[in-house]
Image (cartoon, rainbow, N blue to C red):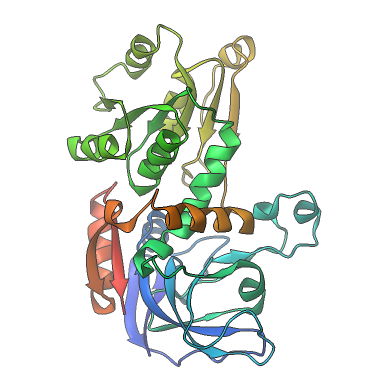
Length: 342
């Protein structure tokens, strides 16, 4: 089969590799859609991911497809079924799993290789984090489940309630998912982005107000002006830059919550005003990854039509063009998703 193999920093090849062999608990899936992701762009730029991928390795993790081979012990799936598989599964037995924090599992099993004609889904993911796609849901819609699950967990961590004012900083696909889910949950959303195209997309997702982050706008004052001088109930940082983390804390009201969702480069540090955090009782949280429960909820959200590929995927390319797509995404920060169809 043809597959994308990551060899290092911006070193990606589309080349023939053996179709994966499966063990008795695995399934083999023919990939019908694999979506590009901000994490994949970061991995492409850096050449590795400390927890998810060490080169040389197959690449890509947001996928949906058809079951074409089934291990002898597999009972949940059969040939021909349309499935979406998450990119990880927890062990279910460690300290964190026993406390309902499967995203922090000490033995979290990751799986890569979505940018290929076929992908092996290992037994643990087959058993704990693979799902049949409802008939009315497209492959591209289903492939959104993995990033959406991360966003759902981020929303859950903020304690969002109807009527809250939520500021979302960063309007790439992840930020726009936050905008949409907050709007659906009954919140008022203020979207902060760098370009008018992002602002327009956020408005379509349900943002009621927007601000341009151009280095000249006083974002803290602007948010206070829109919130009777208080600041937002919840601020979500979906950029992954230290300066954006620091800005987020300045936009929240007393007693409010900040979610540092965007992952910064390794070794990053930020400065926080301890008096502000203490006397204003600001809660600062960070959200990482997802759990099987969030994957299931994400599939329900997609099945209802609250999140659809037409809002997040603006291009379709063959596998042969993946290197060109990655280079384009690397130079166009905040660009929407591309569906890679092997």
